[in-house]
View (cartoon, one colour):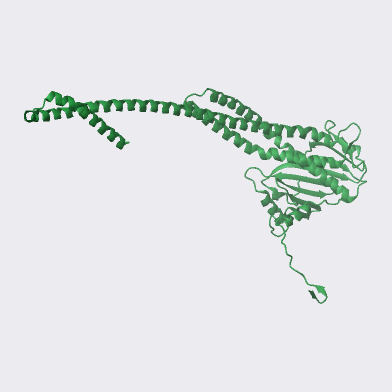
Length: 426
């Protein structure tokens, strides 16, 4: 159908996936900002700690600070907010575990913590990283800029086939920032923005990788205690014989399993996050395409030599915890099997006792029945004797012979009567 020569709009026959908007928002959530001139870029990353505000609450604070209307957290615009104040361009970014504030100003800006860019919105959070990048329009880093770096940890290299140079020693300056010197005079404005963003991400992700290391070290002693307690428990499992000993061993296993499970819950997220950050960091480092200058090392080599062992330590700690949990489960299964076998043995003993008791009762019952037959027959014959004696004078019956003949009959009849009674009782 056409309306005035134009095709009429039709309602689509399908609906958008619920996550389609979020997908597009994520694709454009962290765009690269072109940098045309020399600049000083600072970034601080925060994460929640203790009873501090949630990251979503901080995002709402910054949105209010920037004069942005209230938006749903599902809206990508609340995850990436820009504001310009006092000659500085500030950008808020909300990540899954942390939030960052990045601001750009001139190289002459000496104020490390400006009051007018929204830093107050992060009150109550914990600072994890603070990075400063001095971007110059020269093709090489000056010797004066290298003077402030420690030669022990200095990373000094070329990027992108010599189109840029970067230098850092990963030490914090007096304001608490890790300083990078970046000479990108041969790069266009987009490449400069990309380089700055890569260096900011590398500094941020490397710190978050290393967050798992203190946790792994702190749990090292705890895991050793778990392993010692596990050895004791397994020894008790092997030597427990009584019901009381089995119950005590099972209670110990359950208590230790609860502690190990709680430790796994406390560390699993941090260790998994460290591994995920390490994977992202590795990708970002490879994207720099570094080449060392002189005898100095590259950023990738320096960080990998430190983040690699840290991640390995986290993985080893996690494996130790999982191993303890697995051994505890096996110990519990072994103890349950031991208890089940003990119960079967006890039940068999009880059944044997019951069987012997039943056999004894049956024999006793037979004995009692035999005695009962004799007693009843005796009394029956006695009564019959009186009766025979009473009629012996009339019928001239010999009592002795009559009793002799009657005795087998009485015994038989009494035996049959008791047999029928027993059959009816059964």
